[in-house]
Amino acid sequence: MIDSTIERKVLWGFGLALLFVLGLTLLAYSGMQSAWQAMQATKNTQHVLLQIATLRSQINASEANQRAYLISRQPQLLRERNNALANIRHIAAELKALTVADTAQQGRLAQLDRALDERTALLDDNIELVRSKGLAALALFLDEGGTQRLLEREERILVALGNKESR
Image 1: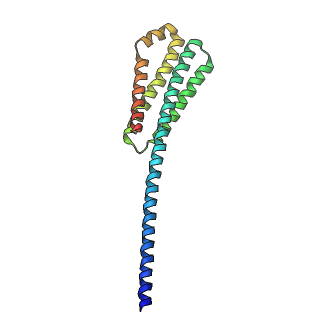
Image 2: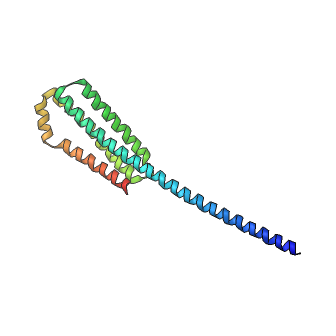
């Protein structure tokens, strides 16, 4: 009778120790899951911010190549401008995929898409204007500020995208 009581107490002790270890294991697993999710969210945020910076760089490259082409008429510069515009579209699509769960970011990206469509049309119109009427006509057009307003609008959208990700 003494042996069975001791055996029972030992079994209960082992059972409680096992439950304790199991509880600690579950707690550790939960903590690791939370840390993993936080790391993934940070990684995604940093990738979005990198893509925004790359997008800004490609917008600047498209503008610079456009201006250089209009002055020099070297076809290579027009190809580089077109490559930058294609890169812009690719990066914008990647940003949409990265922020698919965020409706506010999707709305900003839709605004950006419209601004990029306007940019492409404006750049093409500028080329046609220079071809048909010369650089002087383009200078008059640029003095109206449409290009600058478009650049400022794009920049405001990019800043809003970045601010949302930086929180």
